[in-house]
Each structure stands twice: as structure tokens, then as C-alpha cells.
Picture 1 (spheres, rainbow, N blue to C red):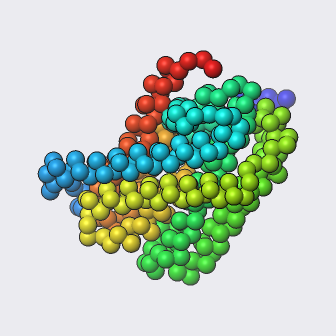
Picture 2 (cartoon, rainbow, N blue to C red):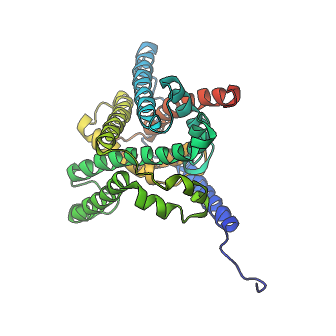
Picture 3 (cartoon, helix red, strand yellow):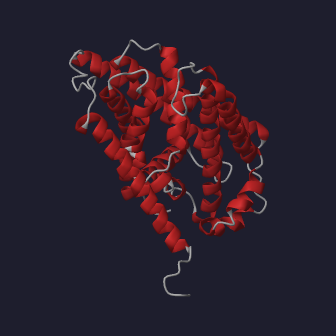
Length: 329
């Protein structure tokens, strides 16, 4: 190789991924800090809790926590429903698998650690298929997020200008893009073998090749069941965010918050991350999306942080404790 030449090896690709991820993370953190502290607008107000007594705040936290427990219960049941196709496990084992996956995924870019994290609770010879099942589970969740996004884009008001000022004239383009994306991932879910073989051309996934032969995923009925569970989870996430945002600013119609929340979750899902489950990225995206209807960015940032702590940080901490105390399988 000539001096000064550059070959795009796996090592270089990993370095480039980390550099880009770190760049996105720093940029998002800088944007949030600039919005709240460096060049704050006149409507920035940190006294968002001053208008509420302790009972109201405790009630909000309790409601959101109960929904989070229900949401986690649905995710664990969905995972148990899928994983038992590979290995006969109890619902308790499914809970441990989900929590340890959250713990490992929490500290890895784009939550890639969730795949080996969940597989740790299974027999070594079955872990390859478990990772494939987890991939299908994630796709089912992404499909429902796309469905909510398509619905919201169609109903968004004319003055919504997150992407372009000419939103109304390009609405058909946006909806077409969402529908195509939704159709692609639905095809993957119901025809996994074809797409899994494409994934296996990537060096990182080649070790799973021996598990793909004869792997046809789940039945059509099972896939619809999984989509049903994923739909419930997306609805509960949206409900949580609506409750928190409306608590801080009840001047915005609930229907409007619902539409904006679905767009926020879609953008957050497809956004790249560095680590810590998109910390900084979620806050910057939320300010961009919701600033058109909620004037105090502090309320927006606090809302998404509270949602993050309840749904991600606390379960990840529990999963980390289980991970450090688990028995070898």
C-alpha cells in the first residue's frame, strides 16, 4: 500500500463510526446548552416546578411510573412470546433478558449491546437464533413507530415546518417516503430469511450464518401478535410523554401534542447515537420538534429527560445489577 493511502478496513470503519457518533453527541449537547444557557430566549424559564405543589409532582411521577411498568411488562411478554420459539423459558427469565439487554445496550452506540445482552440469559448454542429474534422484535417495534409517524404526518397542521417551509406542498412526498419505509420493514418482518442473508454479508453478522439456514421467522399470526404488542408499547410511550408535556403546559391541545410526539419518536429512533442511549440527542431533537407549540424549552428538556430516566435509566440500572449477579448458564 502506498504511503498516505487509506483503506476502508473494519478497524477504520469502527473508528469513523465512533468519531461521527461523538461529533453528533457533542453537537447536540452544544445545541441544548446554547438554547438553555448561552443564548437563551426570553421564554426560557427554569422555574417550571414553582407552579405545582409536591403532591401534583408526585402524582405525575406515579402515573408515568405505572405506565412505564405496564410498558415494560408488555415488552417482556412480547420477548417471552418470541424467545420461547427458540428455547423454553419462563416469563421471569424473559424479564431478566430484557433488563440485561437494556443495561448493555445503554452504554453502546445505537444500543447494539442489547443483542448480546439479551442473549446472555440463554444457552450458548441458542444465542445466535435469539439475536435474530431480537432483530425481528426491533423491526416490529420500528414498524409501529413508522405507522404512528405516517398517521401524524398526514394530520399535521399546515404551519408545521420542521423539515421545510413548503411542508404542505411536500406532504405527499413525506407520506410516500414513510409508506415505502414502512412497507420495506414490514416485508423484512414477514420474509426475514431473504433480508437476513443480506445482513450476513456484513462482517459483524457472519458468525450468525449457521443459524439462518432453515430460519423462517415466525408465522403470520405470530407476527401480527408481535405487531400488536409493539403497537401497545408505542401508544404507552406516547401517552407518557403527553402526560408530562401537558402537565407543564396545558395550553397546547392534546391532539397536537400527540402528532408532534409521534414525529419526535420517529426522528429519535432513526437518529444515530454515541452512547448513554442518545443522551443529548433526544433533548436537541425534542427542542427542535416541540418548540413550535411549547414555548419554554426547559419544559421540553425536562419532560424527555424524565421519560428517559423512568423508561431507560432505572431499568438499565436494574439490568446492570442482574448482570453482575447472574449465574453462569
